[in-house]
Every structure is written in C-alpha cells, then in structure tokens.
Image (cartoon, rainbow, N blue to C red; front, side, top):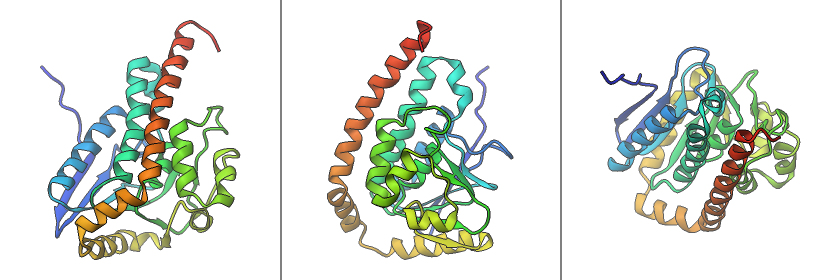
Length: 246
C-alpha cells in the first residue's frame, strides 16, 4: 500500500489572495525538504491558476530553518534534488506572475533567508527573532545561487556582512539590510500581510507580471547561470564524499 504523505503546506484561496502556510509540525522548523518543495510548488500552481496574489507564511515561531539536514544522509540524489529545488523555488517566486507577500512569522535561517529575499514584500515580527544566512558560520561554502539572490536583494553595505560573515540580524536591522520591508507586532502580522495582499490584488496584474520580468531580467539570468554552476558543484561534492575525499 502506498504511504500517504502528510499535508505540511496548506493553500486557501479567497478574495484573489492565496494564503500558503508551511507547517511541518511543532519544533521542526518548516525546513525545506523534497516533500515541502513538492507541496509548495503544488500550492503555487493553484495560486497561479487562480491568478491570485500569494501570501506565504509559516506556522509557529519559525518561518523557515533552512534545508532539511537529515536529507543529506539519505544519498546524493535526494540531496541534489533538495538543494537545486530550493533555489528553483526562489527563482519561481522572483518571477511569479502575481505579487508575493511573505509574512515572516519568526526565525529564518540559511535557505529560509533566501526564500524570504524572494518575496516582493516582506513583513517581519517584533521581538527576539533571528534572521541569518549562516552557511559560512557552519562550515559551508555559500552556493552560487544564494550569492546572486543576496547580491540583488540586500543593500550593498550588508551584502558582505550577511554572506561572508554570517551576520545575525534582528527584525529592525533586517529592515536596514533588506531582508524585510516592515516589522509589526506578532499578533498583527497576518492581518497586515492580508491587507497588503488585498491591496496588491487591485493592481493591473498583467502590467505587474511584465514589469517584474523586465526589472528582474538580469537577476533571473544570473540566477539561472548560478543554478547551473551549483548543479556542477553539488555533483562534484557528492562524488568527493563517495570517494571519501574532503
């Protein structure tokens, strides 16, 4: 009997807004796994078909804690699909035909920070919240794709600090850096995000789509090149591990 996958992404479309919620269980961190990617893309398919503005958020105190590190132990194929799939998801959001609002409900780490940077408007919450691209801190070379996303979306003064030095941001400094556009009290997050999403739904969405693709043409070209470079890197790293090399 085929095992039924649990629902970890919900999608509710109402009044031209698709509210997409990541929820992989209490304390699990809404990590980016192959299954999370599959369900997120299914939700985005529904939003695109309905021509709805996207409101993406997480459940609990963590927006997204990055890639699911347990997948790294399951083999090269799963790891490759997860890593490339994460950056393909960012590329999809950056070129999505309707506005993308991200309601960052809590801590955001590694791939979660790149997902955050892929929204058109990002709202965070007040409090002791951590936002960090911590790859270098934990001993990983920053992927080409992550560098391009950060290069294009972070303010220049923070690019080196975030990417090279794994600087830890709180909500207020995250606005200064470019991770967030606005910070509100936690209890007001969804209401504020929904209000903005409804406001953006009144835009001429054809003009929005054409303008987004025009203004992000160079970013998307650079990101496609970066994803190709990451594919080569990830395969080489997988071969090195198989051969027992460092």
